[in-house]
Every structure is written in structure tokens, then in C-alpha cells.
Amino acid sequence: MFCNTKAFYSKKRLTKIGFAFLILPIVISAQLNYSGSAQPAGMFRSSDGSQISLPFRMAELKLGYTLGNFDIKTSSSLEYRWSTGETEFDLREAYAVWYPRFGEVKVGKQIHAWGAADGNNPTDNLNAYDYYYMFLPGTDRKIGSLSAAASAYLGAWQIEAVVIPEHVPNRYTFGEEDFPIKPPFEPEEYIKVEDPLEYGARLQTTVGESDLSVSYFESHDRGFSLIGMNYLQLQSVNMVLPLPQFGYRSTSVLGGDFVTFFGDLTLRGEMGFFMTENEANDCCDALLPLEAEYLQYVLQGEVTGPFDIQFSGQFIGSTVQKAEGLTFNQVILQQTELTKDSFVPGMGTPFAMFAKQAIMLSGTGNLMDNSLELRATTLVNLEEAGMMGGFGVAYSPLENWEVELGLTQFFGDEADPTNPFTQLEDFSHMSVGFKYSF
Image (cartoon, rainbow, N blue to C red; front, side):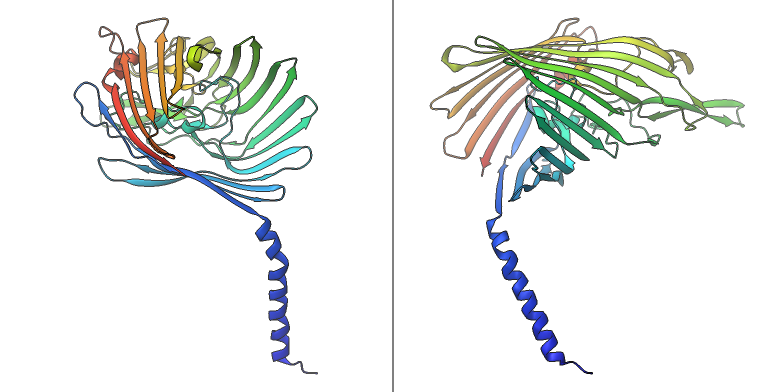
């Protein structure tokens, strides 16, 4: 029996048309939303007015697509450097969200946010830091990672679980002459993380007017460190050359945070307890054993003052509780005992690298029907000489348009060139920028 080919394809075409009409109401009912900005800006040294040549985010775009209980969200930026004209597109986030009755499920490249304090979060270690944007707030200085997260809401309780299948390290400012704080060298290669799977959970509840949470995260350091040694025999000079090997330690973080209120005062607290070690493997000739424990913490207070000025203060601290094992002294070219002073954390809030104890104070006020914003910030090292002061102005002459001016100054100890604030003095700068938001 033979079929009518023309009739067959005609029916197939009608089927496609029918399917298109079937899904058309679904597509029409979906919502596409977007927002973004174009923000050219420049940085100039306070000392001589010379330009600081570092990449910055020239433009940003957020796209969202909503269909029933599903969302697709993306966040991207265009990075630009004035001195070379180099541009680089960065897809910072791209993930899908499902909103079932019990909570939400997210899968894709994401930037997570744990903790209660503003900006300095010892418990927020799920994403690596981008050190080019270290002085920006919140998620602006984070790097997205492929992950899956699920949150469930049970009355006054909320539990969140996160799984990250790949290890993502910090982005450092290697070789940047205009950025004084950076690792002294860039390793040619890193020891591969044998088991890159990372996971964590956070449990949060409300007691009275207070929010409390505890969290646990099993991961690897975001910053590289010394893992072991290889030795190269130089027959011509009868000498053994030590070759340090770098990688990422295994680190677990137990955290807790709270938010509570006392009249007009909002009080926030956060603490992370870090347990880190060099994992046993056959990566090199001699693995350097290491076990360490350290604390990072922050206490924050907020209050609204006269003229609706928002005042905020933070006490930031970091202390090494335990450091045992071996390290390698590059000066004498020998293995030495690890001490609390020689141990360098590979995870935690970046401001812990500036000071073991510090106070950060800030104030923000709005004038002229919120078209003018004034802000001031200071960070003071409590253990040795060191201070950062910043002042900024943002003026909006027209809707969606903004002019931004800023001044950041660092003060160190001229007698101590190793002081981070002394190294940052040459980074003191003025900034100017224009921003159009849509």
C-alpha cells in the first residue's frame, strides 16, 4: 500500500502550526524583565593625578524570564581597561529557579549570600573573591560558580542546602603595577584538587524579634598555599634544588550569625570557625603536613541619626587558634616549624588580610529629595598603624542619570614597609564616573 506523500507533509505542517498555537498563550503569559547600567569611570592617584590602570565594569545587564513557577536569571558585565582598550565579557550568573510549595530550587552559575553583616561576612565562603573589586560591597566582589541550591520553609524555620561540584579560586591581581596588594609571585601551576565537590547547609529561625542561623561548609581554600616540595637533583653542581608546590587546602567552616533590635538600634553579629589541613596525596616528593584552626568575627551596629543619616559601625577581628605542621622558609631554603604568625588563612573575609582587629565606621545621607547622596567610610587598624578614609558624592540631575565622585586615602607607617596600609598609600585615589541606569 502506498501513502499520499503530499497529504502526509500537509498533515505534518498542520501539526506544527497547531503546536505553535498551543504554546503561544504560554509564551505570551511569560514575562521578560531586564535592568542594567552603563557606567564609565576613572581612577586617579591623589599624589600626582596619574591614572590608575585597572579593569572595571563599564556596563552591566540583568535579564530575567518568568513563566509560572519558573525563573531564568542572568547577570553579565563588560569589563574595560582604559590604558589598553581591552574588553572582556563576563557572564557572572546564569541559573534557573523553581518555586515549589516548600521553598525554592536553583541550578546554574550563581553567587550565594550567607551571613547577617554588611560586606564583611566570615560565614559567606561559598563563592571566591575577585580582588580587582575588593572594595565594592556585597556580591559585586564575588565570582559565580556552578552550583545547586535548595531552600525549604517550615514555619519559623528555613533550611538551605548547597552543592558546588567544581572548585573556583580567587581572582588575584597578579602583575598589576597599579595595585600594591597582591601575592608576591604567581605559581606556574597548581596541584589539582582531587575531590572538588563542596557542600554546605544553613539553618535559620526567628526567635521573638531576632533572626538566628547556623551554617556548615565543607570546601577547599579560595586562596592558594604551600602544599609540599619537589626536589631537583642538579648533577653538574652536585646540588639539590627545592621546588615549592602550591595548591588548595581542605577547609571546613562552622558559622553562626544573628540580627536583633534594641529600640532604634539594629545589632548584627557573625562568626566563622575555620578548620584547615593539607590533604594526603601523592602530589609531590614531600607533602608538608599542616593543621590549623582560626576564628573570624564581626559585630555591627546600625542606627538612624539626625536628618535620616544612616550610621553603621563594625568591629572586625581574626585570630589563629592553632597552627601545627611544617612550612618552607624561602630565605634559608629549609623546612621549618609552622607557627601562628607564619600561618596564612586561605579562606574568609578579605579584610582579615589588612588587620587582625579593626573598626569600620560609615555614614550615608540623602538630600534634595534623594537626588544627592553623601557617604563617608573609615577603617582603622587597632593593632598597628593603619587607616583608610573614604568620601563619596552621588548626584542625580535627571532620572536614571547619576554623577559619582569619590576620594579614598590610605595611611600607614613609613617605618614599616610591610604594613599593608603603608603599601596601599600609593593606591590613594580620586574617582569620577557617570552612570545611566535602565
